[in-house]
Image 1 (tube, rainbow, N blue to C red):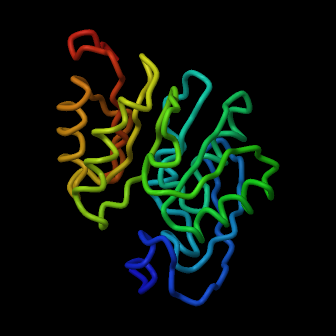
Image 2 (image 1 turned 45 degrees about the vertical axis):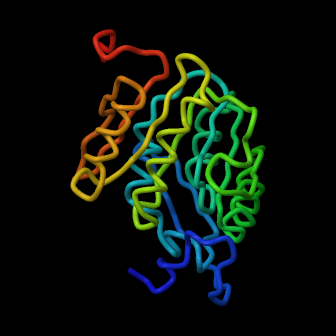
Length: 209
């Protein structure tokens, strides 16, 4: 991993700004090119887990929150692929937020992009979907906070969808999602990567997906 990696979960990256393009091609053939800045996670390339999440997310409802959006891949692609969505994005990293706005404009995407730690920018709001590629290296407390507080920001029937490497913290995330929501399912298994989904108000014995 690059030296920039250790800095991405900070409000103000100290690394000198460098920008590289990164290309994403979905399995449906749609292609996206993002401006990626140094000091932000996945500089210079699209993170594999992010691509898996984008391709396997279960889209429902209208309002989608891309939590910890980085330079905007998940929210921007999902808005382009599902134009009826209302997309909201936030990140603790100010440089990430700046480039999420730049990339949204480059892709003609309207999105509400805010700076702040986890759910702080969204107090009083509720969403139909919260999607997240969590910063595992930032520590257990961070991903636990994402899961624990998610029900407060979801409509009834709304979902939290998280991507992670199953053997690198993902299995613990899955177990905690079940503990908090009372249900969890796997939308995808590929190359060690899993996409987990929990639904607010769904009992495990009602989950027949």
